[in-house]
Amino acid sequence: MTERVLVTGGAGFIGGEVVAALAGRYDVTVLDSLSPQIHGDDPEASPLYRRVLGQCRFIRGRVEDASVLREAMEDVSYVIHLAAETGTGQSMYEVGRYARTNIQGTAELVELLTKHRADLPVKKVVLSSSRSIYGEGMYRCAEHGVVYPGPRKEDDLAAGFFQVRCPVCGSTAEVVPTTEECVPSPASFYAWSKLAQEQMLRLLLPPLGIPFTIFRYQNVYGAGQSLNNPYTGILSIFSKRMVAGLPINVFEDGAESRDFVHVRDVARLTASVLDSPASDGATVNVGSGVGISVLQVADMLRRLYDSTSEVSVSGDFRIGDIRHNVADVARAEDLCGFRPQVSLEDGLRELAAWAAEEIRAGAAGDDRYEASLAEMRSMGLMKDGRA
Ligand SMILES: NC(=O)c1ccc[n+]([C@@H]2O[C@H](COP(=O)([O-])OP(=O)(O)OC[C@H]3O[C@@H](n4cnc5c(N)ncnc54)[C@H](O)[C@@H]3O)[C@@H](O)[C@H]2O)c1
Ligand SMILES: [Zn+2]
Picture 1 (cartoon, protein in one colour):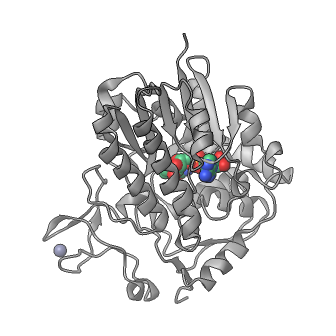
Picture 2 (cartoon, rainbow, N blue to C red):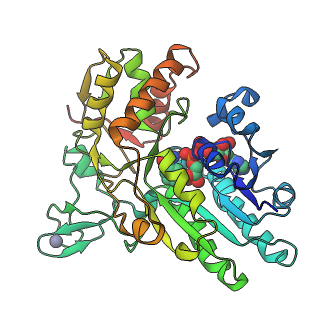
């Protein structure tokens, strides 16, 4: 008999690719609330939702609703838990909402496994955690070696000093690829909630004898990512503005970096560990292992869109943003044989071709970006640079 996998949040950007990667090999159930922030006001028409419809048994509901979750868990051998609210900045004021989905949702999942161990034959849980739990991540100070700096000081940022300081001596520290051993230092409620999800699994699943794998995804991108959610995804924000020829405001000094990993690579890896015990109990970074600056990626996109948008570095900054993101991905390769297959060039070309069509067809909705920045400003989370 084909084994059944429950994918929570399976109608989302990553979920859709995970469902595609599982289809044919497993019998897939998706539990997803079709959140309007991701799927629009008419979620039945959401392309992300329509993409998974034919490939799974679909249940519309919330993960924190214990009765609907129980229904979705029927005969499930594996759980891939992706459902989450994902806006870093937004999580700083929509705190209750983020707690309900990300914390309560995971708590209900684990409680169900605890109370119904006898009649729920779950063999493994896979969690999509996030690199955001590291905060600034790992750095090296010439004098103090590897250090784990806390959030950058607002005074430094306001003065146009965007580098990361050694927490011991205060001198400028150099970024090094962040390993899974990095001391967590969440800088947003979203990040804190992802760390809470991890810790719930580590605390509560071993006594039940249920193996788990925790993935810490870096910046996941690709065709199908939300063009409507102004709170996440610089590639979407840049894309919409570039297609419209609107100016691009690159925050800080443009040298801040991100580790972009293609959604198909992420999905393939996530689906591959269900029946492989090598990663049981492990926490694994999922990234490309390469940091690319925001200015570089803006230039690449501008060329791909052949856009007239003016790209300017503003010195503006957001409280809670990190400076650099580069993952150490040795463990993913060692335990899971993971090597990204999609290069950034190819992935961005594919993203741009897809996004240009969506945006020109009006499928990307109004540009709510300016409004979201104003909202962040009014909450004191976004500041103008000195320029
Ligand atoms: N995209 C990234 O770069 C990235 C990076 C690190 C971690 N992650 C994690 O990966 C997972 C998936 O992210 P994504 O980018 O696909 O996000 P997404 O927003 O596209 O997908 C999340 C899905 O969860 C659903 N959902 C939201 N609240 C729900 C609830 N209470 N009950 C049931 N469903 C609910 C949404 O409708 C959506 O379909 C999340 O756990 C996220 O924290 C993503
Ligand atoms: Zn130092």
